[in-house]
Amino acid sequence: MTGRPYVIAFANQKGGVGKTTSAINIASIVAEMGYRVLMLDCDPQGNTTSGLGINKKKAKYTMYDVLIDGVSPEAAIVQTKFKNLSLVPSTINLAGAEFDLMGEERRERRIADFTAQLEGKYDFVMMDCPPSLGMLTVNALTASNGVIIPMQCEYFALEGLSQLMISVKKVKERYNPSLSVLGILVTMHNGRLNLSSQVLAEIKKYYSDKLFSTTIPRNVTLSEAPGFGEPINYHDKCSKGCKAYEDIARELIKRTVG
Image: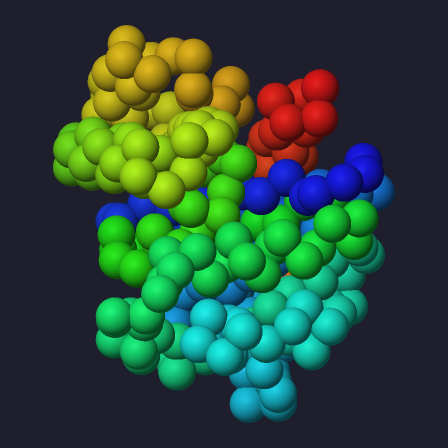
């Protein structure tokens, strides 16, 4: 791939849906496939940063510095120990960015300005967004070509999906006409539960063209891997969770690269 990277936001205003897990593992597997991938940790919790084995306390620059001070990619990007995978880390300081950006010009385009400097350097930029629809998520969506929506198979998740679709539409109308929903990713799926089957059927009814064909199962190793600071393809290559994310990564490449 040449030219500007394909920019993807992982977004859902509901927490605990496997958003960070999905962002880390898909990014790592796509990178392992030979693509140059940069992750932006846009969540003040910094779980993507620690999930990739990066010590937050040692980060000289973070996403806060990118958003507020316009720090360059050369200064902000750190290399992970994983093949073809780089990161702009995050710390709790990022929580103050929402307030600090109030009244600033082009405040919704800070990440877009940053990714515009990455032409020829990366094939993909993948962003883990906070579980909210505030300025950090708006920034990420404004910079993105596509958004991936991880969600659990539960009825409240369906309500949240509708709200998020409305927000994506507003960002598309106001700031980013090229934004599209790249895919809906069902996580923590248990095929033995009637509820899971019912909710999945509802998603297919309204969003069949957006739904990834593979669902991510509940899997112990997926929960364990972040504690070791490793993506699943490095922690347990043979696990069901890894196989599922590998299928998603291949489908993602088909939807983006062709």
